[in-house]
Amino acid sequence: MATFLVFVVLVIGLIHFYLWRRLVRDTTRPGRWRRLGAAVVALLALLVPATMAGTRNGWHWLAWPGYLWLALMFYLLVLLLVLEVPTALVRLVLRRRARAAAATGHEPEPALIGAATGAGNIPPGPTGDAVATPSTGTADGGGAAPTGTVPADHDPSRRLLLARGAAIFAGLTAAGVTGYGVRTAMGPPQLDRVRIPLAKLPRSMDGLRIATVSDIHLGPLRGRAHTERIVAMINRLDADLVAVVGDLVDGTVAELGSAAEPLRDLRSRYGSFFVTGNHEYYSGVEEWVREVDRLGLRVLQNERQEIRARGGVLDLAGVNDVTAAGTGLAAPADYAAALGDRDPSRPVVLLAHQPVAAQEAAKFGVDLQLSGHTHGGQMVPFNLAVKLQQPVVSGLGEVDGTKVYVTNGAGFWGPPVRVGAPPQVTLVELRAP
Image (cartoon, rainbow, N blue to C red; front, side, top):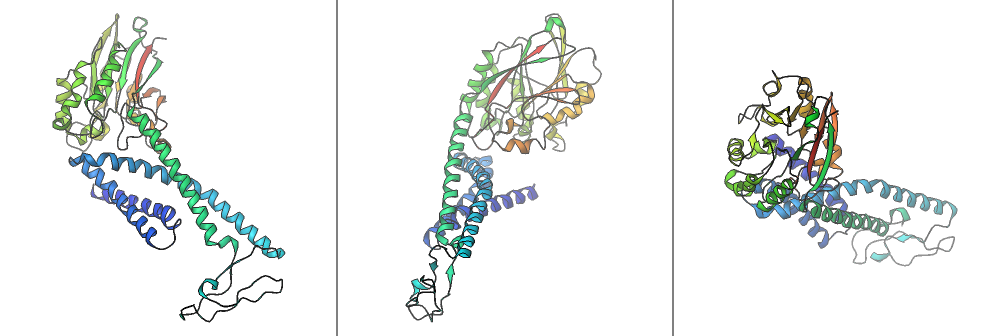
């Protein structure tokens, strides 16, 4: 854990150093404003780890400024990196034009070095243009000043203008994207409906509906009203089953018990079910399992439940999150316990927080796995990084013959920002062949 924290601090430091170079050093001349900008960047660099540590220790007032800056930092980094290519091309074009002008003898009037320091009279050159002559010292009698001309491609004013233009564009765009993301994340979840055919589903169970939600993430920025809105939305669906597939909370029962209380009002024909996500293991998993059970949701911990409905039978299974392995807090994910020794003629739906669980679930012939965890990437283009770890990021996919549906989740983690992955509650409708 200590090694990971050191790595995170190092990465944050390097990112802020890059932001300082592009937004402060490259856009200002030496002096008071550059020093002030450096101090601001240093404080923002300290704010990120302070927020991550502080919000876990009750300093919830840090959440809004700290996590908003984390989102803004991310988009500034992405945009400035993208702008590296066009700005480099602009510099190259200016350099070539300057060289071409110099070769034809029609170069623009050069900037003079030494003139501002009292170099004296500048005699005309052979073409009638002024050229610089060696200077014997500065106006106050100091050391010798440099001589020569400044080519147009190295003109400090041009480089400053180019850097400021890139910084302004990146800053305004990052602020606009972040603002849009805040509005999306804090707004109501969208309802998605998806029909998924299961080859083994009895005809009598055709149309069985499972209201699926994940990643509610009650915590310093989301409380009871968030839960109430989600519960009301699910109850309006009049679903046969409700599946809450992990990451309900970012805090202890003592801190967030009242925020989770509205879950007791969930309504469904055949029951509401819950499986643990990785954040439950950071928040006191044993207490939360008891609390969720008290609120009326059946917690499936490496086990399954027969769902008898409309004259047919479906197995609903659930496994602990893969994070449980090695924590000592709960049994690790046990697919054999949840899926072994069952009637293979029945369809089975598995609740597993992380889509990657399908790689093991497929070995047991799971027909459909319902998952969350990815947040759909939460902030484009972060979804590209999520693909490196999870086989399905959002929506319906397939892993080794097992269908996997991944919902975006109804909340957020860290920055209260969602871009390209709106919050979501999904109504999964199972269809017979």
